[in-house]
Image 1 (cartoon, rainbow, N blue to C red):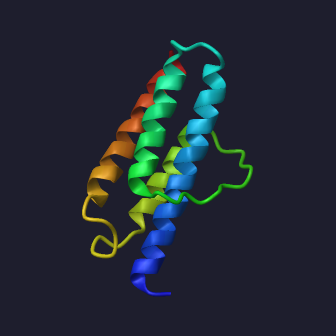
Image 2: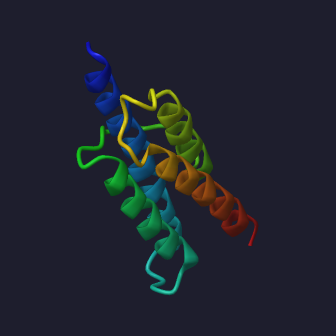
Length: 108
């Protein structure tokens, strides 16, 4: 597997974890259209779409929202800078911000 194919696989895996985190957040938001979890889920889905248009499916996992986001961050950290997209550092920064936001919302 060449570097670019491996990088694409890692991007897909990271996006899959972000989609899983978004699904968990949506379930916490329930039917409350004003829930902060639903807004958060939208932000996570937008970020996942920016990372990869073909997210991998994450098998049923015991991970929490924070766990999925941390996994995505760890996976993206494994992408070689020259093999990944030019905006890789932006996505890493944004996922760190989402992790911080998830921690705040969980405490609220």
